[in-house]
Structure formats: C-alpha cells, structure tokens
Image 1 (tube, one colour):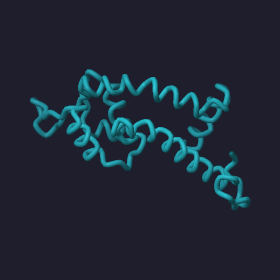
Image 2: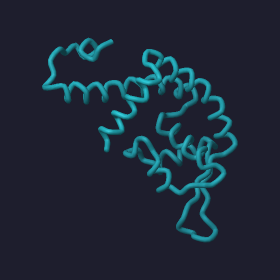
Image 3: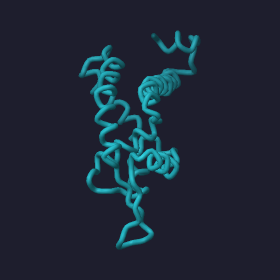
Image 4: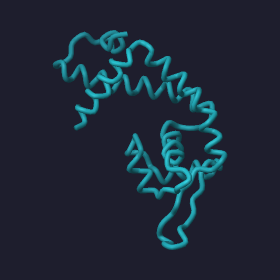
Length: 150
C-alpha cells in the first residue's frame, strides 16, 4: 500500500519529505512485524539485537561499550537491556580478573539455543516481508539508505 493511503495524506512538502516519512513509516512497520515474533519469547527487538551481537562475538565476551557501539538502536539503555537478559539467564556479566573496572558480557548456552529457535522464524518473516522486491531492488535500496547516512 502506498504511503499516501496508509497516512491518508496526499500532499507532502516535497519528494524528500515524502521519502523521509516513508522510511520512518516502513521502519516502524518492519519493527512491529518483528516484535510480534519476539513477544512470544518475551524479548524486545533491542534485547534480540543484544543477543545477536553477543552471538556474533561468541566465544569472546564483549564489554558494554562494545555492545552499545554495535546496536542498531543506539538510544537504547544497554545497561538495562543487559540486566534484563542476565535475569532471564540468556547472558552473563563477569568482572574481568585483570581489570576490575571492566565487565565482560557473554551469551549463555540458553541464549544461543533461543537464537537457534528464533533464526528460522525471523528468516521466514523477513522473506515474507520482502517478497515484493527483487534481490537487485534490495541491493539498490540498501545502497540508497547507506548513501543517505553517509
């Protein structure tokens, strides 16, 4: 459905405003679709992102700053997210033996198992959400979005 139909608005200031609103609206639309899957596992998109970051560095632990730098939503409170995931047994926080000010954060086996369970569900959802564009269009879209942020 076109943005104009979704927002019930036919006029925009210019093509740039139209594009920006479309990016924001589509990002929200994708996050809602992802959230529906994650909610079944008592996870937020931000918590899922933290787990994926830690899986990517596994078995090497990361510190909080490393995680924050890699997060998609950098405005998230990483300390709070890590603590909630620790309480669920999905990651561990340990003080570094060589530097007591440094805290090492690592995904647990339970966290890795949860991600293995989520992977096919997320893949299926992403394929369903993007089935209307070709591989070439997806590449072009990514290039344009990267260009916008550069």
